Length: 130
Image (tube, rainbow, N blue to C red):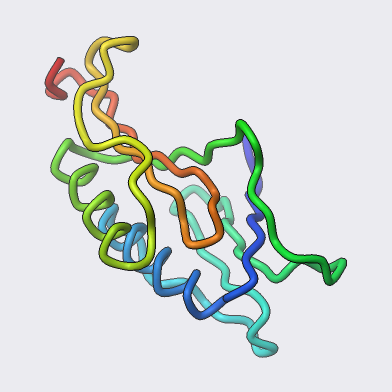
């Protein structure tokens, strides 16, 4: 459904460190820095892209109020690793790992990246604890 997601950041090296860690915990390779150092690009296995970029209009980066970017996790352990990697690399807790009773069979953890973007790693599988 999606071709790409773009998030703004003012500190691209800090963003790359954070996203390399949290996406690495979910089994994705490190991002590719553009030659100008203003963007880092992550390529999904399905062809989708996640790009972290300095805003093109020159204004400071801000996060979406009410927006969340969700990443698929293969297991509760991957969710736990995502959350721990984020906290260790400049992220802030937005919801500790655990079952999400609103959707039976789901297990998730929420973070804010260094800019304030809200992220979730979500496992929706029969083996996820309820």
